[in-house]
Image (cartoon, rainbow, N blue to C red; front, side, top):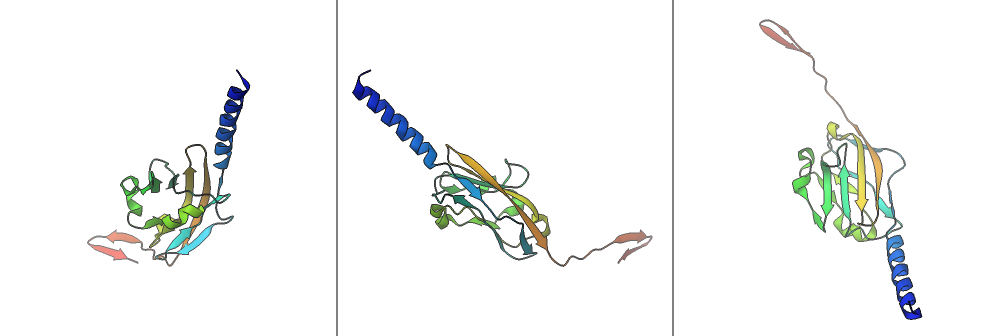
Length: 156
């Protein structure tokens, strides 16, 4: 191989390596649980570090099952057809903020069942990372106990 060919191969390899390392990132979230009251709206904060655009990345928010997302952003689109039914119409990304690496999830009208662990997975195609965020839901809960005393049902 002549020196020109070696130079071009080295340049191509360097460009590939630099391109790969420019997409290495972490997904950063809060160091403690996020607290919300039943019925309120909440933001589960997550962002890329260093700050790079996530606009062309895949962003998946999920609970236990990766294949049942709370929210899916893929191929520059929000994909509600893959979303868990319990979250339908209650979630959003700040799509205008994706350019700044903001991948936070907005959850509206929080329910008791929304409490627990959330995972935000971000995939650039060359690199992926995730962060885990706990949502604690507080509120006034009514407890009912029912028992039957034929022919009467008593609710306390």
